[in-house]
Length: 353
Ligand SMILES: Nc1ncnc2c1ncn2[C@@H]1O[C@H](COP(=O)(O)OP(=O)(O)O)[C@@H](O)[C@H]1O
Ligand SMILES: [Mg+2]
Image 1 (cartoon, rainbow, N blue to C red):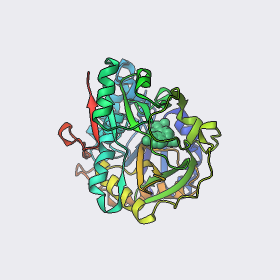
Image 2 (image 1 turned 180 degrees about the vertical axis):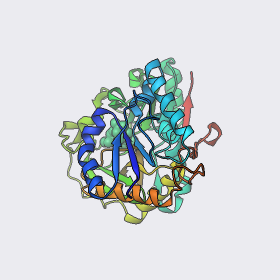
Image 3 (image 1 turned 135 degrees about the vertical axis):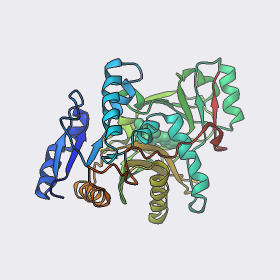
Image 4 (image 1 turned 90 degrees about the horizontal axis):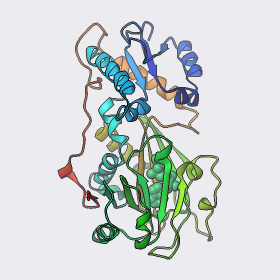
C-alpha cells in the first residue's frame, strides 16, 4: 500500500464520531497514508488520491437551497470527474438517493420481490408530496390499505429535523402530518431494532432499543410526536421503548437472510459503506426493512477500522495506477440502479395533491 493516498472528506461531527485521527494513525501503522480533504480549498493541490472516502450528506442537502454548498459540491464533483481513476466510496448518485425517503423506500419495497425466497419485506407506505385536505388524505390511506397505527417520517432523511417523527392512531389525526413526508404502517416488533452495518463484503449486526408494540387498529389515542434518537440510540431509555406486556423473546434475524439482504442491497446500491435497520414482525416473524443509512456510525462494531482498511486495500488491489485513465469497476462514475417512477412496488403509492 506504500505510495497510496486515501482522502477523507467528512463533516466535523462525523470525523469526531468515527475518530478519524485514530484511523489515520491505524492506517499509518499499516503503511497507508490517509489525508483529510478540506472542501473549501482546491482539491487539485490536495491530491492525488487513489481513493476518497466521504460523507457529504450535509453538503448535498444544503446544496438544495444554499449557493455556498452548491459550489463546494460542484468543486468536489468536478475533481472526481477529472480523475476517473480515483475510486469514490461511495458514488455520489447512490448516496444522494438515500437522503430522500421517497427514493429509499422505493428501493426497500422492491426487496420483497428480489428477496422473495427469504420472506424479507418492508412495510407498506404512502408518499405525501404536498398538503391536501384531510378527506383526500384519509381516502388515500384507506385505498392503500394502510392500517393504523402509522408512523410518519419527513421526506428528507438527513439532519436533525429528519428524526422528528410521529405515531398516528386514527384517520382524524392525519391532520397532524406535515408534508412532504411518508406514512408507513407501524409494525410491532417487540421493541428490538437490529442494525446491520456493512463494510464492503463484511457486515455486522448490533441490537438497539426500539419502539414498543401498540395495539393494532385505529384508536382514540392522541398522536405521539418523538425524535428517533430518543428511541434507537444505544443509550436510549424512553417510555416509548418499554414494553407494556410480557412478551416471549423473538428469534434473532436469520444469518442467511441478513446475508442475502446485504448482498442484494450492495448490488442495488453499488455502495460499500451503508447500514440497514431491520425489525422482526412479532406476528409473522418476517424480517422487515425500515431504513437504509449512508456511512453509518458502526457503533458497537470493534472490527470497523480493520474492516474499512481491508476494504480500502481490496479496492487498491483492483485499481489501475492513478496516471491511467482506465476506469475501475467501482470508479466514481459508476452509477447505481435507481428505481424509476414506473417501478413502484405494489406496496407503495404516492399522494401528490
Ligand atoms: N414501520 C415501522 N414500524 C415500527 N417501528 C418503526 C417503523 N419505522 C421506524 N420505526 C422505529 O422508529 C425508529 C426510527 O425510524 P427510522 O426509519 O430508522 O429513522 P431514522 O432516520 O431516524 O433512523 C426506528 O429505529 C424504529 O425504532
Ligand atoms: Mg434508522
